Length: 275
Ligand SMILES: C[S@@+](CC[C@H](N)C(=O)[O-])C[C@H]1O[C@@H](n2cnc3c(N)ncnc32)[C@H](O)[C@@H]1O
Image (cartoon, rainbow, N blue to C red; front, side, top):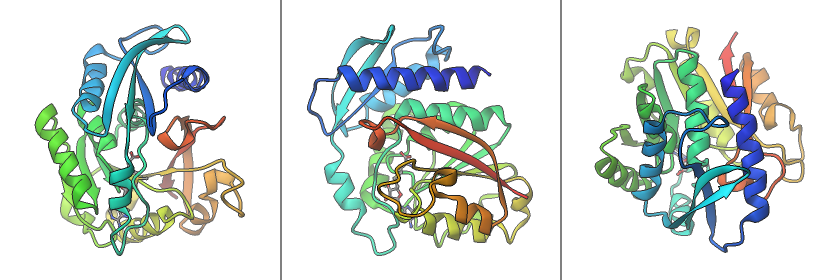
């Protein structure tokens, strides 16, 4: 219940931020400054999220602002250089576009509350989801194909002292059984029909051949945008793949991401299990 409340409050906060933001940066996001009734998150965890942003060179400016009654820090940045780099790989399925840091924390909080033990971020970008997993005391593995982004992750690791296990690898070839997983939750870092489906299919096919199938959860980032995708937007655009592999949706939470900044609806994170 607490999670639902936080998700709802974050949706309101994001809409208000979109309305009042008057800067011109390429990307922008917010993190509450401290624990509050609307966002009852431990201050130590919030501090880690702020440190992640402060030590991350994609952000070049920050300032405090009260938004919808909550004091927040606004982070402004630019990912163009990383974005361009992430598309140069032959088997890159999806260019770098990050989830909001605070959204990453909330989506991992659900994994934590559901008692998953290991989080594997497939296509992890700057590693924010894996970072949040480590902050929440999960085993964390961060798989990213682009060496420049993995260097960025290692830079953040060194400067935050949070080791979220960056691995530079093609997620399609990666041997997940080598990780000795027991209750894993896999986050698929890509949207459907933009390459995310290629990433998801390869991971699902690998897991479904192993015992991990019983305990594993797969999380998809969906889209509500009908303009971009001609086919169904049911299950955030993932319904075909979910049906094909006999997955069952156990939860959907909608959270702000960099790419939904100026949209009315945010990104659905869809939690599924094998049936
Ligand atoms: C949309 S970003 C998501 C980043 C992160 N998961 C997040 O939510 O902030 C997708 C990332 O997947 C990476 N990627 C694409 N194809 C990949 C592959 N085959 N193996 C590993 N990573 C891949 C890209 O380089 C990019 O950083």
